[in-house]
Image (tube, rainbow, N blue to C red; front, side, top):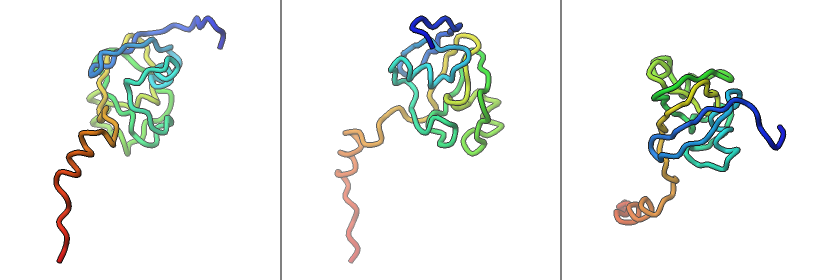
Length: 123
């Protein structure tokens, strides 16, 4: 890829964060986000195996870049707009919502709540 990337790009908007980034029509939503150092969509294995990047397409058209694991996106969910961000590319501007949690698994709030109610000792 040259310094000037002339590939057609579409704006991808993440509903929960309000963040938007350009993504080429031949790169995954994840690749476009990571290329720009953005953090709107959770990142896992980046090859469709973990399901961490599950999103719901609210508006826009996408194309599959590879198979979508049925372990993470059922046929019914796919019909409702769910997909994996690492396996699809935008074909028009896209508005999406992240299906999983955007919080880090060990946030301060969770640590406090975990220590607030200790596990009872067995006698």
